[in-house]
Amino acid sequence: MFRSFNKWYFGALAFLLFTGSFDAQAQGEGLFKSKCATCHQPHKDGTGPKLFQVREKWESGGAKEGSLVKWVHNWQAAAATDPYAEQVSKMYPSAMSAFPELSEEEINSIFDYVDAQPDPATVVAGPTGGDTGMTEVQEEGGFSWIWILMGAVFLIVIVAVGGVRRQLKSVLNEKEGLPTKEDATYAEELRSWAWTNKIYVGIGSLVVILALLVAGYRELGNIGVVEAYQPSQPIDFPHSVHAGVNGIDCRYCHNSATKSKSAGIPTVNVCMNCHKQVSGRTPEQETKIKAIYEAAGWDGTMYSGDTKPIKWNKVHVLPDHVYFNHSQHVTVAGIDCKQCHGDMTKQKETARVVPVSELNKVEGNIKLTRATLTMGWCIECHAETGISDGPLDGKKDGYYDEIHKRLMDNDKKLYNKYLEDGKVTVKELGGWECAKCHY
Ligand code: HEC
Ligand code: HEC
Ligand code: HEC
Ligand code: HEC
Ligand code: HEC
Ligand code: HEC
Image 1 (cartoon, rainbow, N blue to C red):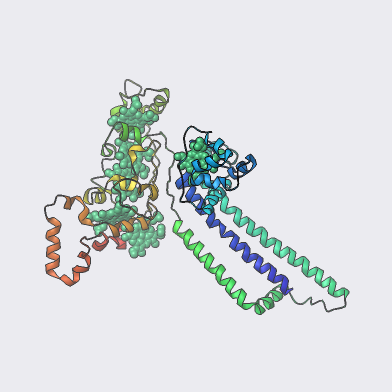
Image 2 (image 1 turned 135 degrees about the horizontal axis):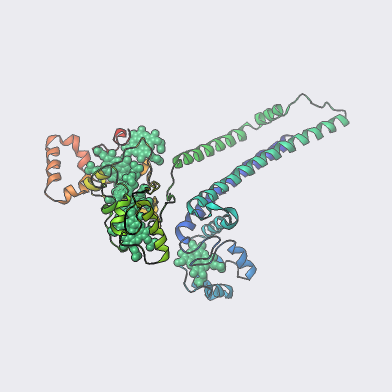
């Protein structure tokens, strides 16, 4: 009995370690999204071919061993040494980039991730099919459920097999005339087994508890964080056409950003300033712009008075207990909209929350690490940014120099620690005080 408990016990531990490969999946996902997703999708051809089960494809196509990894490192080198790879390299007009920095393990984690993606054509049918934000959430949610399900099945199997064993054993004992030990319940056997193996059990439990704590902590950190959130909108309003091609200033439509707490969304009247004349050149544009006319009650020559405001869905949403003020950041601190919203002049689709990894790529932005719109994001920036980096100092009229001098003259010891790095950060000014941001 003890031996078999041992087997189950170490089996369960192995299973837990196995679920640790879940992390490798997350690694694959990160790598795929940051390095490959611009050209490849799991199930659809794009700039590059779809990657679903590409390892199997290469193997059955007769590629040399290790050739696929070589391909990702440097496709030209692979094409030079493997006829199959050479054939693949002629498939598409455009060429792939080289990724010499990826290890074999990382490359396989990418393919593992890709192969674990369900085909959206079969998974999400029906009205939500076109909504990319939703399908993504569903795919990811579905994936972790598989693990929970597998764990449950595993437990049931342990208990069931254990029960059968007990019965067999008592039948066997009965046959040989031994005492059947009917009174030793399952729990008692488990307890006495745990007692004799207390060191292993102790270490095992510690590992499990730690793992659960770490997982729980990570999950908590992600509650409510939806980076790249992009709700659907009543009209497909492209910022690229307005703020980009036509060079309309952000403030023309979000004119309260410099003066007040919120940036504001333009009313339909603002749209009509131009769209009374601009009705679109293509049928596609015309149908989109017709929705503006309907909202404004405009029939092409006059207003009917029958208006229906456009119900834009809010993209950036902070919880009610947080206070954020645009003018404090845009006007006082002189921070560009790009720092927090990315380059909207290139946004062809409707607006979205831009993940911090993309914000970091925008030229001139302060690089941050925490997810956009989380508390970590706000306070990280407050710890890094000097208030005197703002336009008040940009005037170079000595405003801040004067204050620094006065502070130093006044009480050197007290203020020196703030000024020794040459700048006063928002944090040092109180930008980490809870009440500054929380009602
Ligand atoms: C700049 C675009 C681009 C990027 C980025 C890119 N690829 Fe490719 N990839 C291609 C193209 C194009 C092809 C088709 C082969 C050709 O014509 O060179 C291809 C082919 C492949 C193939 C062979 C597909 C087949 O059907 O046999 C694999 C595997 C592959 N890429 C993996 C990756 C991985 C992994 C990454 C990320 C680390 C990546 N690619 C990033 C453009 C890209
Ligand atoms: C012609 C008017 C117009 C101009 C110019 C314009 N926007 Fe917008 N903006 C809108 C409309 C309409 C929406 C709501 C639709 C949407 O969310 O896609 C919006 C939404 C947004 C949102 C998301 C709002 C939310 O709900 O959280 C941000 C951020 C934004 N704009 C930033 C900018 C920036 C930065 C610029 C300048 C580069 C700019 N906009 C220029 C009209 C405009
Ligand atoms: C320091 C970061 C930061 C900067 C800089 C910034 N925003 Fe925002 N923006 C936010 C946050 C955070 C929200 C969400 C506010 C909320 O939900 O209360 C937001 C929301 C918005 C919205 C949605 C409507 C609203 O007021 O809630 C628009 C539109 C917008 N910003 C446009 C702009 C424009 C235009 C600029 C540049 C003039 C700009 N933002 C600069 C962080 C920033
Ligand atoms: C300052 C002038 C101006 C304002 C204000 C303006 N637009 Fe436009 N809009 C344009 C121009 C110019 C085009 C490009 C038409 C073209 O390509 O011929 C356009 C195109 C469009 C298109 C079609 C884009 C496409 O190619 O798919 C939509 C939809 C649209 N606008 C919606 C809006 C909405 C909604 C508002 C109000 C929030 C608005 N516009 C405010 C000037 C403006
Ligand atoms: C890109 C950097 C950056 C980000 C991101 C940022 N802030 Fe700020 N914030 C600043 C700067 C710089 C100032 C100082 C402006 C000044 O000189 O008063 C400031 C000032 C403030 C103040 C006033 C502090 C005081 O001492 O009076 C509040 C409140 C605030 N921010 C809230 C937020 C919240 C809430 C968020 C996140 C949703 C946020 N900020 C995100 C840079 C940032
Ligand atoms: C610079 C602005 C800022 C400061 C300073 C700040 N917070 Fe926050 N806090 C936020 C924002 C923004 C959120 C919302 C984050 C989200 O929705 O994910 C938040 C969320 C929270 C939450 C909800 C849990 C969560 O992560 O969503 C708690 C609790 C909290 N803050 C406590 C505090 C305490 C305690 C302090 C002082 C030590 C503090 N905050 C200082 C901006 C701030």
